Length: 461
Ligand SMILES: Nc1ncnc2c1ncn2[C@@H]1O[C@H](COP(=O)(O)OP(=O)(O)OP(=O)(O)O)[C@@H](O)[C@H]1O
Image 1 (cartoon, rainbow, N blue to C red):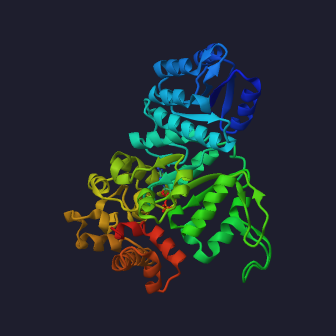
Image 2 (cartoon, rainbow, N blue to C red):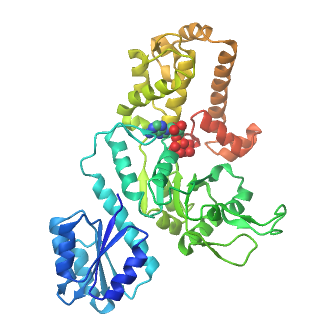
Image 3 (cartoon, helix red, strand yellow):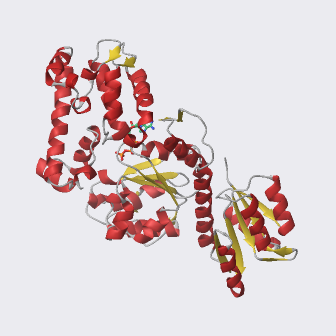
């Protein structure tokens, strides 16, 4: 549902200007005074109110009081001249979301309204969640996931920058796609980039583009991903991996809404909605000085946190069942359900690789299993855990059910995971050092980690 912004001012040129500026963020409804503002609030659902203080038929504070009393979830922003700032402070005490002093910068006002819209989305989330099993490609019916779905619905139609936080494999990319698909930018392709997978020396040119000859290897002019995502959405995954210099440049692009290719003096306007994601603790990084505070302020307009799978264990059987139903036919398996022991092992496991790890565990089990029921023995050893049936003896009989190729592939995957864990442990989660030691490119190392459902973070603690 598109958010509705109510703009209240008795000067027609002001309402017209604001309607134009805020039109990108949602539907704008205008009112010329206190009475017509209250009528609009009665008439239709309003998401955010932006209201002048002094109007010919009364005072903005009257509107504020009515909003606080009857629509308490609707953020209220007061517009005021410098001379009346004490009244604005009074308005804040009475529960206004914020105030702006006239004359104001339109960009700053837009950013403020965006924040208020995001706040309205968060408040809305506390309303009764609908009873659903999933949302688009996302599966899950836990209250935590239903809140995520509601937030997606609320922020999608706004142009607000969104930051998605969550451990590896929690579905950050799925969320980014869901937001894009529900936005007015959906007809254009979402441009996605994993910042950790691009070599450090290339990331600046990859994002912002370059002019021919601007560095060795720049043999032709090249547009960056920001330009490629013009009029669409740019998904910046693993944003916590960006170096401070790139963070600074990114902040500037978000502020100015224009990019400068490396080696080019001119600015190019871009209309891009940014959705960023990271599995890192950015708040901690800001405190530690490794993530720029100004970029954090730009990104935290709307923060969407995805819970780790172990904190929404009620979703595990549902996810496992769906993944099995999807996979079994392709794997030539007749398995349609899980044994009780297998289900309780799935429920008890910690899932450091979250949904991605669950999906690959189920897919692997579907290949191994020859009966109609996935048994404990078909699950990866770390998931079988300490349970007696999961002891090595049982594994050999399971192994014997496989073809040679399946058995070797499964052991290779296991050996790879054990090796990755061991080197990450040795280098305390420092991927660059671990990859160098392993003799593998950093990007390939990340790919292997993903495949194994591992996160370097686990080893940093
Ligand atoms: N709620 C969910 N329902 C169904 N599938 C999911 C869900 N969450 C994640 N997945 C699946 O898990 C895998 C990982 O998801 P995704 O790539 O979105 O995670 P991520 O958080 O972006 O991971 P990373 O931080 O490693 O990039 C994908 O195969 C995705 O389809």
